[in-house]
Length: 285
Image 1 (cartoon, rainbow, N blue to C red):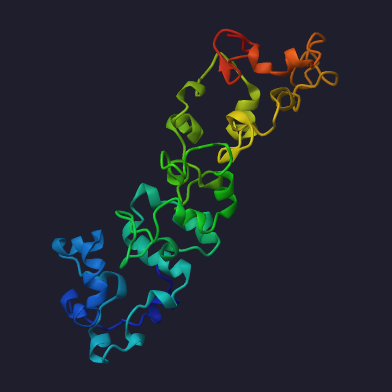
Image 2 (cartoon, rainbow, N blue to C red):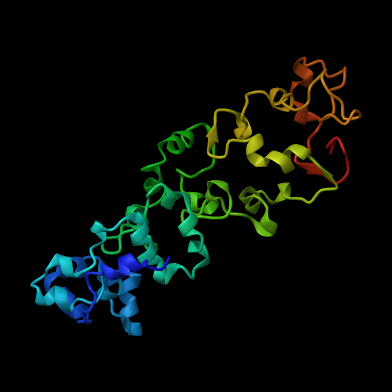
């Protein structure tokens, strides 16, 4: 995310010299002493960095102009892309941030400063404006409502966070999801017994993934299933009359003795290893 020629030509600090963060404190003591001094950015001063001017540019012209705001980089005047380019000049090397230029957040004009506050952070060490998940819920109201359902991941209780499953700075996968070991879905990072590989794979798991059957944020159904009855979920693929595996037309048909009376409605009472099995091609234990 290097600056374009047009941006470099309009740099308000072009030709200025560094004056040091001590000079900045003379006018901006409220920002420095009540926030910035305790941040990881301020700690970089011990490594010989320029402090404030690493982000806002050299400030000699700004100081000589009596605080002329046109002679310093003001992030309030920059677009999300421009802010991201400046932040990524230091943070791009992090694996966590390597996909930010292609992230859904940036594509929706959500930039670094919409979530982070370099001067007055409410949560450290990430310099967040609010602690998670409240920060995420500021935009993702639908997901907040889903987490209030009776069967859900325990995000509101603080047992996991949004960032455990999603990388807000972008990934190469849909919904900015992280991946578990071996490139598997992030779900198997915790649900390791579902990961496999199995001798007998359930095709639905391979094709549709976990969200083909489960709603990850929350559901009104046990096990966060998409439908209330297990047999109704299975019947979305396994027709009782239409196709057979022998004809090569799709999932095997449901046999005649599965008459959908109450005793047969919970398919997983018999097909217990529904995520995959090493012993049975019909997923018996």
